[in-house]
Each structure stands twice: as C-alpha cells, then as structure tokens.
Image (tube, rainbow, N blue to C red; front, side, top):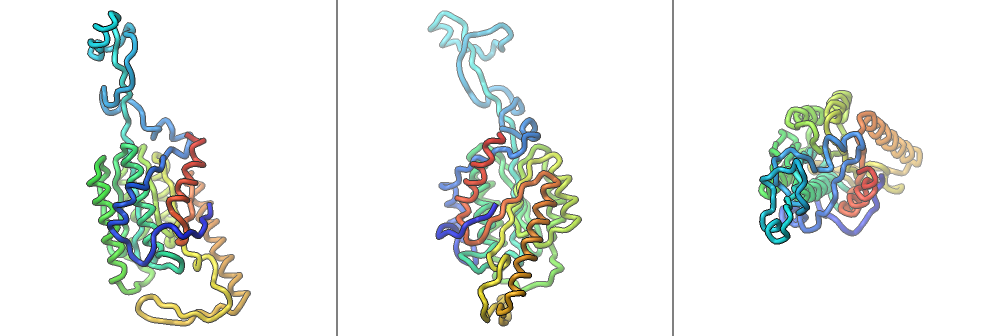
Length: 316
C-alpha cells in the first residue's frame, strides 16, 4: 500500500499533545479483523466472556430453557404473554500499540518527521479502539528505554499512552545523534509484547523497522500465532528516493554536511536498495501472516487508515 502526499495531517519535528488528544474527534476507524482464521478467536468482539447482561439487545417471547431471571415482567404483564430480555454479551479484545519513538524516527523531509507521523497513527488507532469499547494500552519505544501502559477500557489509559508517546517524542530533540547500537531494539520490544499480551489481542506495530532482523522476525512469528498483528511502516520520501541532481546541505542536528546527488547511477541504486529492503520486509512479515501498511511522512494518515480498513471489511 502506498501513500499519497497531502496537505492534511501532522506537521513539524515534534508532536503537540493537544493535537494527539484532539484526534479523538476524528478517530472513527472500524478496526476489524484482517484474518479469517482469527475471526473466531479475536472478534468481531461479541461472545459470552464478560458475564450475563452486559449489552441489552431485544425483548422476545419466552421460550423453554430461557433463564427465568431474564423475564421482562413489565412486558409480560402488559401483553399477557411471557417475554424475556435478550442480551448480547461482549468479548474483551485488548488493543496493544507498539509505537517507535527512537532516534532514527527523528527525521523528515516532507511535512513532518517520521516520529510525529507515528504518534498520530498511534493516536488514531488508540481513540478508535476505545470507541469500539476495546481495552487500550501499549509500549512506547524511546531511544533509552521502553515504557509500558497496561491496556484498560478508559479514556485515562489512552491519555497516559499518548502522554508517554509525546514525552518520548520531545526527548528526541534533546538527544544527540547516537550510534547504531541503540539501547532499545525492536526485537526486545516484540519479545516484551509477547510477554505482556494475552492470546486474541489486536497488536499494532508503528515503526520504520530500520533494525528489523532475524531476532525480530522470530519474535514476530510467535507473536502473530495467537494475536492479530498489523505493521505500519513509516518512511520519508528521501529514504526512498534521492532529490533531483544537485548539492544539498543536510544536518543530523549536531553537524552539517553536503549531499551530492549529481550521479544518476547513484540515485538509481539508492532507489533500488530501498525497494528491495521494503519488499524483503513485506515478504518476511507475510510469512507470519502480518500485513504491512506503508505510510509516508507527506500523507494524510487518517485518509490512508480509512482506505486500508475500508478494504479489509470484506474479511470480517
């Protein structure tokens, strides 16, 4: 799935907490199951797991074998025939969001940085899940540590999660560029996710997947065996394709340099490398039954998510 550059969506190098909170008014995504095989395990949200009478559905004529405690005595007295209340009981589906806010996400050449787009996607998913009466929580990957918010069915849980995302996002601007030996690894976060989640959870991974490796693949395979996992790969246009021929001044926040894109051969190899890497990632995830949704920093995240979940409704 490819995204289209838009004038809508997040902007800038850092998140605004008020904007993440305000996403609750836009978030109306139907986060339906994308796997037929998981439909009986993880959804579509209704089953007898939370006790009798959680969700009233209708009143009908009493039938032999109905629970006498459910008889609607008012309707029975009014009509002269025994009537019973029918309840639709609800299965809990924890929604767990793994949001990447590590140093490599602090980059962007379009409208916003990857870390900001990842935060918005996390917010849209979290608020949408809460509106579906799901329990919401997750892990936020910072450059130095991983921060957990346990899934709960409450507005305060979503706010705690988004506050953690916001805090780690703003910590990026205070950090210097770090080496490739990050203190937090995607493979470790996936392992933590396996430990924290119960079977039947809906798990959303939002990252640039720059350090996805064999260990990550193994952890993801085990995670997806008993959960519904969706991966959102956030990337920037400049990571996929170098700018037109020329000389550009670039910075990592602490030092400056020149980027020379005069060579057509270099630009072609650069684009081919990214395409191969993305295809390899997509194929690797597909082996575990995990769909990959690619989101570019210039896209309208809400429109892209709506498009994706509209396409998935046929698999409910």
